[in-house]
Image 1 (cartoon, rainbow, N blue to C red):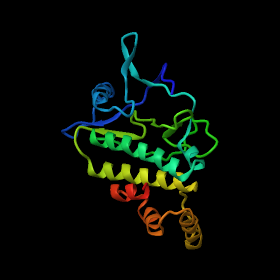
Image 2: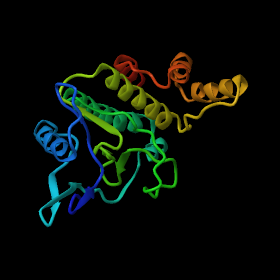
Image 3: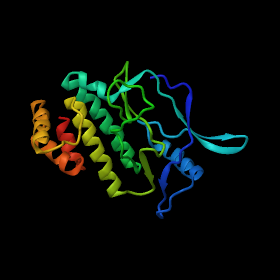
Image 4: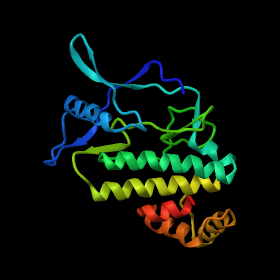
Length: 216
């Protein structure tokens, strides 16, 4: 991956401090930059950006020559699971630092991929998964553990894993007959029926052990 250059973000970071107060844009970025010292697998904000002394946003590492994580669907099952296990470790590290990416599966018109887009990219040379949009667009920062956002983050990850392993979009069925057809399509690809049904019932599985079991 080529990390030269930076991208600038003018949107606020969703950061809630230990007292439950949502921080201002600049204060939130400063706190997020401090968190980067404990995060080694994912790039968080790198620095404050000012123009003529006026705060305008934050800078990030720039990603080049990457595909959507859905490109992993075309790899062998073993390689696909290896990539997803690496992604799981990165998200787990973020959780340990109270950062919760809750929108991993997303239609993003700014990313020119041929398939459905996500907030996870895949390196073209090393097949390394990279998380993007950790600037408050799809992730939430806290100073303490948040059970609700932790579960939302795991649910989002479970749907992404289900889609990548199967190569099938996680879509809303029109009726019970279509739902059964979709579930059977997943089962044919080795995804447990109960696991798929639970994902549809609860919009993702907020269970770390089930996610790990799926990646065995």
